[in-house]
Amino acid sequence: MAQINTIAVIGAGTMGRGIAHAAALGGYRTILEDLLPNALRKAESEIRGNLDKAVELGKVSAADANAAFARLEYAGSVDEAARGADLVIEAVPEEMESKIEIFTLLDKICRPGTILASNTSSLSVTEIASVTYRARKCVGMHFFNPVHKMKLLEVVRALETDEDTVETAAEVGRRMGKEVVVIKESPGFITSRINAMIGNEAFYMLQEGIASASDIDKALKLGLNHPMGPFELVDLVGLDTRLSILEYLHKSLGEKYRPAPLLVQYVKAGRLGRKAGRGVYEYPEQPTAHERPASANASD
Ligand SMILES: NC(=O)c1ccc[n+]([C@@H]2O[C@H](COP(=O)([O-])OP(=O)(O)OC[C@H]3O[C@@H](n4cnc5c(N)ncnc54)[C@H](O)[C@@H]3O)[C@@H](O)[C@H]2O)c1
Picture (cartoon, rainbow, N blue to C red):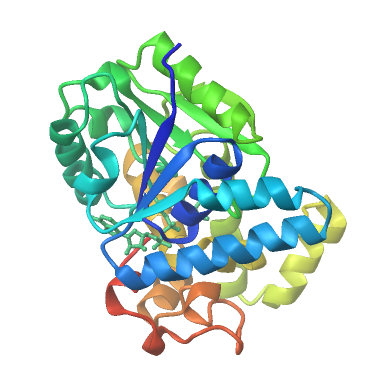
């Protein structure tokens, strides 16, 4: 298994900051990078807040939280972040072109042994890896939102990923406090595929006027024991992220994943979820899409 000391995380949005938090708490020197300086500032204060909350709740000792915070560094360019890393975890928006751009760059910058991981929710890691000269060192590491709380990590074995890379990614996940499942690449993996199907069906039901959003949420929580309703969940995940996943599943797995027209409309209206201050529900305490930098709204 490869020795991992330093982890670079590319993209400091919803997922990147959580991955950096868990990596630092797992004992890794962690360098977080984003092209928006504001995203890095927000990430730093959010990680501090989440660590403090974990101390308050008695989940982490103050000494461990402070040590984790001290292991975090922030970088303004991919080059600066990834040059010395043993593992790079990419968490930029869910668009193949963005992933390919980052992996092409990482392959040039990083040492030959550095493992390149993508946190993609649904895209083909095999396709992302194909732009590098190290496909066997490329792997999917699919974390869940919010990363510092969610226990699961799906490690995705792409066509050419070697065993050592899979084992190393799984071990890093365990040190980050996660339970790991290793899966063979397939569109949407396990969780995104099932979740996208349920969430899409909920939008079709809302569109057909079968019930209100809050009643659909209530039914799944109380009747099926889901911890969150599908609309509460999509507001957390981001409606644009969900739409990108569905579009990809529709293209790769067929008609049953066609995105509900109402979901498409919500995304067009800028109702992207909690991060935009409104999604299926309204979040008056959150910034509106207007107050956020335009590129932060581009996609997830
Ligand atoms: N949101 C979720 O619930 C969730 C869950 C699991 C996996 N994912 C996956 O994680 C990835 C990131 O999603 P997110 O929700 O954190 O998105 P996000 O929009 O919250 O964050 C993306 C960040 O990447 C930055 N970025 C964009 N292009 C960049 C570049 N070229 N270099 C550096 N930074 C760049 C943006 O400024 C932004 O801060 C996606 O692939 C998504 O599918 C998301």
